[in-house]
Image (cartoon, rainbow, N blue to C red; front, side):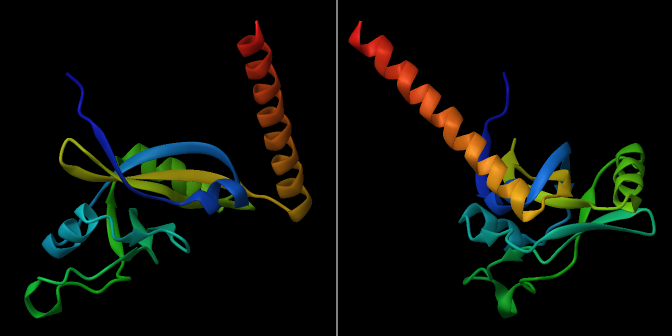
Length: 155
């Protein structure tokens, strides 16, 4: 029996701005009001990124809305959140970030077996012409699927 993955939020812009090289699944150290807010699906990863500081991974600029029923205001919405990764994964991410043009960005936040997880991706930044080329390829693939789909429906 596998645990169900319940999506909270995605960072769609990250897949557009970066060529994804590798992905990691990490747990997050959260406060109770943050978990409640995530269950209400009030989070945003728009400008979020991951850093390695003193051998530990942190998620920065991830917005988790304040929980309205929290005692004394709950939590700081943009605070630095520790990510739970094993040592080898942290070293791999740190080595990749040290390379020129590689960034660690969160792709999505979700619940897996009742625990909040974040999918972290290593991505190389795309230039404007790379983004246009990726969009063109995506449109061509979509057109191919549509045309083959129509051909099979008519038969």
